[in-house]
Image 1 (spheres, rainbow, N blue to C red):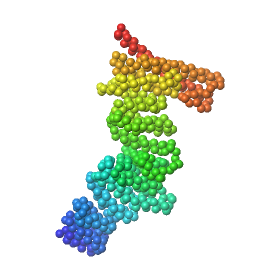
Image 2: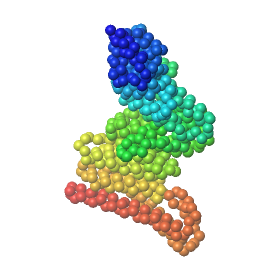
Image 3: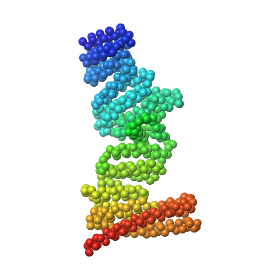
Image 4: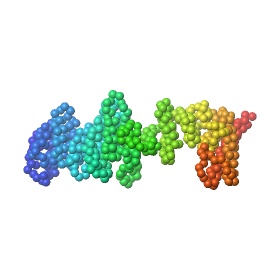
Length: 575
């Protein structure tokens, strides 16, 4: 009988000194204990463990029972007395076993679990694991960090419940498990807080760093992809509760403000492999982006939010996070996969318009460039009708020649795809394109347009027109451009000629006056009054403007020449 075998081993070991225990004794104890559990004698095993005479034996050998004990707990139903006995055994082992040995045994069980059992196993072992960690004297911070890393690594492959029904069902137990893990950390957070209160120099201890790592991982998973909006019918949203707890931990260990506003750099491991270093940097960026979203959008930790920072500084702090969040969403999608119907939702129009504002108004160059990159990524995701709609919207609302020029270049690329691919694309040929070209091939204020200020748009428009004239034969007229030639000449080419003559005459007169050192009116370039400069500097700016006009004039002449040659060729064929 299993109990008799166990008692025999116990009696033999009771007369031995702790140092005299042999490997054979450990093996026999484990086999007999496991057999007791599997044969349904958990109550008798519990009595053996609780017997004061067996304290030394359990201290040294008890941790070997963790694996069979976990199996049996999951084997019995919740209302089974045998399961209750197993749970009490687990509680006793946490109190009596050698902390170091039991710690490794518990981590091994968490590491070996998989699939639907992950959350159940983690929640089962969190309390004994916490008990053991609180007993450790040496390497406590390392052990806490190892435990949290192991737990998060096991949870991360699990799908995050998103819909209201999924969150309520919590099929795998992830919602419940995440909040249990936060509760698990609280004694260690309290320890860090107490130590910081004792000493103002307590800024960067190992335990604090391990807790920070856990928070950063939690922000990446599950919070980055979790549904965090309030849901009707759910009194306490599990992920909102989890998010609030993570914010609280960061505030308690004095890392919230440095992370959000001061870009505090974590101590990242020195990776020899650059690929690993890039992954670490990406994960950190994702976590910080999620943190910004929680605070700025969802208002978690808003009471901690300093009111002294200007809106521009807040934008600067969060711009990288905005980029990360947008890219993380966009990069998951295939190009051309986003249906144009999404643009009926106001937010889908607001995003590119807001990106344009950053591109044109933000004083920080690298943020302007990032916004441009994201805008292109955003455009690429829409189907052809979506791209068409976006281009019309941006041309009408951007009020910036550089942005308009960039949009016109995108239009040219889409026309090229339409003309060179076998697919039928009605949005960048025919009457749809004609309607779009009416917005492109014109001067905003006719001949009075400030050509220097609008030079980017004008050059892009001329290059587009040159491309259309070269690629689309008048006999085919796929794009419809040849039908538009009279209107293009009237609204774009002729006013441009007049504007160029006026602008060149004005700047040449300014150059002459500067050379003669005559007192002249203040020079305005691109709509802005020139700052105080030396005469040589002003002359350089004025000559640069003339060079731009010459460039526009050169491309304009080439376009008109191509149009004339094409029309003459058709007339010769018809004659």
